[in-house]
Length: 77
Image (cartoon, rainbow, N blue to C red; front, side, top):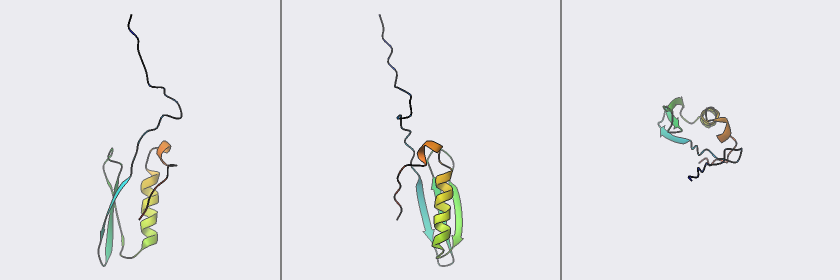
């Protein structure tokens, strides 16, 4: 007799999703790229020194993640 085992599928089953970001900082413009390595990268361009725009780009990139991954802690330099 064979036994089948399955992984429980409930709200505690985690989906590992990480947001990867890179930046190219120039005098006049900053270029940001964000990806979760599952879809194509999102590219943003902001005026050099505009840190508020950078945070907005991070929020938009995080908003594009699957709903189950959005509430997890993050580390921002």
